[in-house]
Image (cartoon, rainbow, N blue to C red; front, side, top):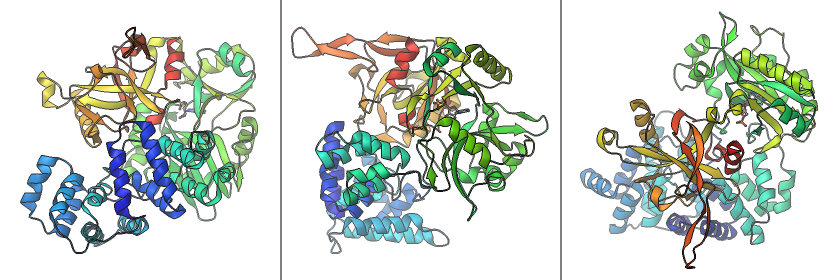
Amino acid sequence: MTFQELSRYFEEIEKTASRLSITHLLADLFTKLNPEELQSTVYLLQGRVVPLYEKIEFGMAEKMVSRSVLHALQLDSVDFAKQLGQIGDLGKTTEHFKREIISFEEKPLPVYEVYKELYRMATLNGAGSQDTKMKILAHLISQLDALACRYIVRIPIGAMRLGFSDMTVLDAYSWMVGGDKQYRPLIEKAYHVRPDLGHIGRLIKEEGIQALEAIQPTLFTPIIMMRAERLSSAEEIIEKIGECIIEPKYDGFRLQVHYRRATGEVKLFSRNLEEVSEMYPDLIEGVRKEVNANEIIFEGEALGFDPNARTFLPFQETVQRKRKYGIEEKAKEIPLKIFAFEMLYLDGKSYLTIPCSERRRTMEEYLVQKGDVFEDTVLIAPDIVSGDAKQVELFFDDAITKGLEGVIAKKKDGIYQPGARGWNWIKFKRSYSSKIEDTIDCLVMGYDWGKGKRAEFGIGAFLVGLYDEDNDIFKTVAKIGTGLTDEEWRELKRLCDEQITDSKPALYEVDKQMAVDVWVAPFLVVEIKADEITRSPVHTAGRIMKASKSGNALEVDVPGYALRFPRLKHFRYDKRPQDVTTLKEIEAIKK
Ligand code: AMP
């Protein structure tokens, strides 16, 4: 397939508002591609040349891409800037100019050729690389037709935003193979172990859908992290899973560590699968010194440590270690320790389906410790095994006294379920005993411009939603207009403005009355505190519609969930859209 033909699909997808239709379009497109083309196309659809967790970025700002366009089309920069101001989108502006120009260089370019060039652009670095990138892009622009140019400039500036999620691609693979959703569970399971959409698509094409059953953890490819259910008392926990392993719940940030002794290579991944190795040189060194395995993947919670007081630091201080600059100095000021709590892979063998107690025992053998909090970097979360609610309660109280969040109970024979929230892990936090104390993670879906003083910021209120897992759709639960500092409003606007979409993304279900001035692609997660969960007919989370008496229209049967007095607690840069609170969870909290 040529990139020009592929661009017709991009355009169709961009114009389509229904998720199901996008799925069909993708399935139709995937059917026409060979394995290699499919792999490249899936990355390009996301505006990338590698899976999301790989740290290869184009490193090209809009200005530089504009320079490529000017160079390729020999345009006057003032003219161009004027049009760009009017159209407001670099892709469409480039397309506009390209339509007016007869280019003798235009020719069909195979998808793979274009992908190769984009890959080269993304991986170039060092002296002169910016100039070379600019020239490669300019050459592509001169060869491609107008529509293809719209997309070729959007890819390097991260503006593809075609409005679908990884889940939509998984569904499309199932449609491609079976003409319906029947293979989605199998595909999703493989994706959770190896979240590389391109690799999965290629494997299905090359070896058939059954090949996915054999997918195993792969060193340096992050595994989607397992999540915990929640309960609000020790009795309920014991009733649910019987005798279990109880560990303290540390309030730092979760890391998945990948290590190969032979090369000394260590990679650290955050919860949203971003590679964050460069941020934590002290942890990397600790892993190299203290981990006694040839190859291992383990998870733990990183916590800041105060070497003077010999105590662990609260989340607000630990989180200062998440930074791009001044890493070394901060590492001295706030060294990190990691409390390992899971092992997923060891020396060529997957541990995902090995029972929890055995995983833990083996992990303890391989993470060598001097047993001194002061000296060790890699620590193991202490545990007790208990079937006695009173004992669990005591362990919980002890954790709270030490300033921790609570405890996590783990089913003794539970397997590690990548990407799943299941009863194999149950979190028990103090706050769950009171509804009002709970916080809820929401997705930012868009914002209104605002009036009065707020008009200064250009943002007056923002719409947030929860995740409907069964349908892969985000549904609204609150519009928030108060409780942010000036600084937070500015930050929110700045973040949102990087991800504006032309119209409401297909993944959002929003009542007309809740429509916003500016829609934002799904990317930003916020932690929201509310006084209560109530019901409202204008929110779509949990809302059920029925046919009205007159027959044609729909009317509200059961109103949706709504948050009372919602306010922002934190921006959760570490969470992915699909990690926000789900409808099922809010139903459980409400009970
Ligand atoms: P959630 O991610 O909301 O399901 O809650 C579980 C989170 O608690 C994990 O993502 C970890 O970051 C954190 N955590 C802290 N201590 C532990 C532990 N001992 N075992 C598992 N998770 C832990």
